[in-house]
Image 1 (tube, rainbow, N blue to C red):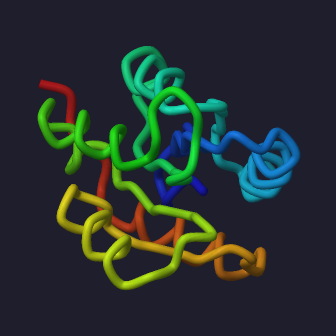
Image 2: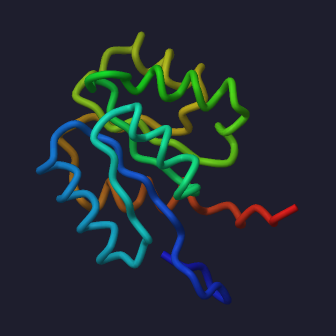
Image 3: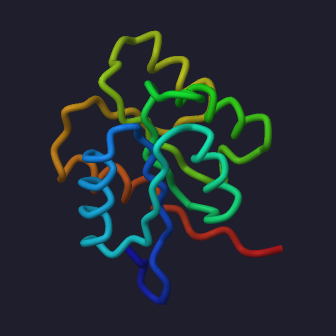
Length: 135
């Protein structure tokens, strides 16, 4: 949602291999006035990081080709973890997975199933910081 005084919506990338879930999350975020794009696996997520330049990302762990941990590792290596605030949204909710995601740069972790209100509150919190200024 745009912050007061901002004209363009905040950019959010949704990454999940379940097309129904991507559509559901993207629709909910679009209704909340976010600029949303989707990716169906980690490889496509990395492409979107480069061309869409999201400010936040909702990222699944279990995906084909490149999983969410692989995306987080890439982001950490490229210095993107503080440019794209990432929330892991996954059915995997054991403490080891949470710790690994956080150590790789995730800022939040939400287990499936989730409520719309939880998702919106968590994405809003990820984007509560001011936008980075272009250098």
